[in-house]
Length: 407
Image 1 (cartoon, rainbow, N blue to C red):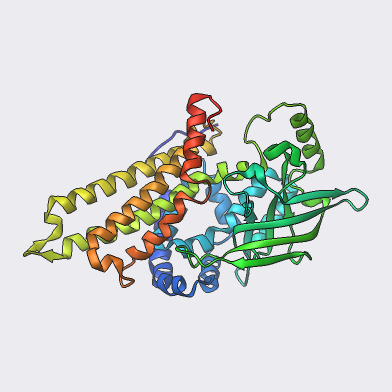
Image 2: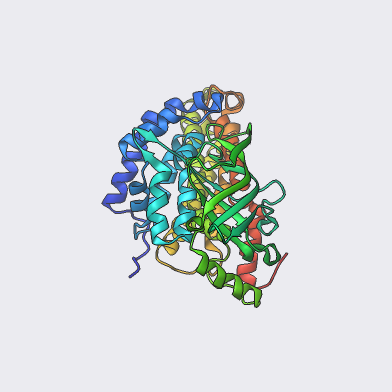
């Protein structure tokens, strides 16, 4: 039974929001500049989140299955209000977890998702590996191959993944690979690579423009052998799906393995962007009320005041789209107009625009690292790129509303 959509969070959601806001203000923000400069995974912050119960399977599962639909968006917005790089280090594991939830059996979910987080005393992270050097937006162009060794009941993975959050440092990697390259995206499957599996190694670690506290790297797969039980969903289900695809019957529902993960996560990514935008807006608002020029606060000028009015309006509009899409997903409402992509598209573009306006309001100060809006602006840039570029989101939306195979 579905819940009624509401923009008024209940007492439980408000308590979680306030708790996370305190963690973001007291723990995340004071550490943000340091880990951005270091460009390293903030393990001490992740461990602190684990000790408090914020970084745990139980916590995210509770929010994920909240029938109001706003549990995950609230979590994402508050953590990323604190800092996007650290926030992504804390929640990056959930993308791999969502991949298992979207494609795995109950047994696989119970086996692998706990290992992705570890324990407060021995924190682990997980990685979802889909993109490749020649296959980003075009997921059908994957070159990573998975070949079944029937004699040993093992899958052999070979290829190189790129742009993998936590790639190479993760305990558990979830890898999307082609099992039948002739079927394009319909010939893909997802595999769990357990901790310590020979043949998996980290390639280059990327030095990024933003979200620099989040580890992003290549993952190299060289004759990586995993048990047959590591194929998410199981071989029988895969064989049935491949048979339908070979007969030309398109699978209804969520589509290929990678897209099932992305569709489930796009509203959450939009909520991350809202957190960044809101943080920058608040800095700009406070600055405009206290910064004086020509004998009065600069917010007294319509040019500045109207900027702030537009910033707040866009942030609230983006949140409406994200909350609607999240509620629809939790309550199994179909995205007939690509509402998930709408939410991610608008929130990502809003974050870029709002942070740019915040820098403009702060003037020269906004361009320095003494003020956080410079970092927020750098962090926001990724939200029109990862989890599907803005152009891909528009393509998905256009196809949904037109019913045409727009290219």
